[in-house]
Image 1 (cartoon, one colour):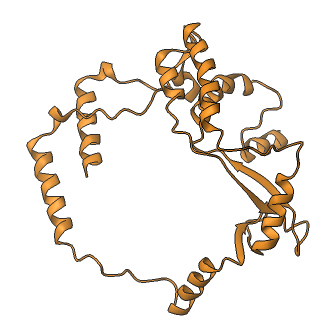
Image 2 (cartoon, helix red, strand yellow):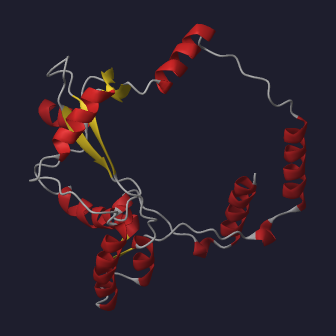
Amino acid sequence: MQNFIRNISLKKYFMRNPHGRIIESKNPCDSLVDNKNNKTTLKNRSTWFPRTEISREMTTFQKNVEEGIRKMKLGIPSRDNLTKHERGALKQLQKNEAITIRPADKGGAVVIMNTKDYNEECHKQLSDVDTYKKLKGNPLKEFEKELKIYYNKGLDSLIISKQEYDFILGTKGRLPVFYCLPKVHKNLEKPPGRPIVSGIDSITTNLSKYIDIHLQPTVKKMNSYIKDTTHIIKILEN
C-alpha cells in the first residue's frame, strides 16, 4: 500500500514540476546516453518519497483499504486446480532427493533424472581444467577489490560520472550459480548437459548494463545484427 501511495505522490509531484522529469525518446538508447558527453543516465533506484503530496483523500483511501484487508477472512484456501492425489504426488517428487528435475536444453520438455547421473555430468563439466578452475574459497571480495580499482580509474579520468560510478557499484554481489540443462535430444538415457552459469545480480550485473547501453548503437549498425525471429523472417521475405 505504501508503494501505491508513493507512486501516486510521485505522479502528483512531477505533474507540478515537469522540469524534474526525464523525457524518454522512442529509442531506449537515446534516452540513456547523452551524446554531448557520452555519459548515461543510469543510476541507482531512488527511494525518495514526496510526502507533502499526500492529500486527505489519499489518506482516507489508504485507511479504507487497510481496514478492508484487516476485515477479510484470511486462511480460506482457494480452489486447487489439482486433485489431492496429484498435489500429494508433487510434494513427494519435491522431497525425493534421488531425482533432479530440470528443463530440457531444447523443446520445452521437463526432464526427471537420477540425481547421481546429474551430479556426475556436472562434475564432468567442472573437471574441464581448460574451462574451469578450482578455487580455495569465495572469490567475491577479491573480485570486488580488483573491479573497484578500474571503476576508480574510470571516475578519476572522467570516463564515467559519479552517478554511473555509484550505479555500477550498486550490485550486492550474489555468487553466480552453476547448473546443467540436459540435452535429451542427443541422448535419452544419459543426456549430456549444457553448462549454465547464472550471473543474475552478480557483481558485474550493473557493469554489464552500462557496457550494453554503449554497445547497442554500434551493434545495431552491423550487417550481421538480428533483433529477433520476426526480424530475420522479414529479412528472408525481402
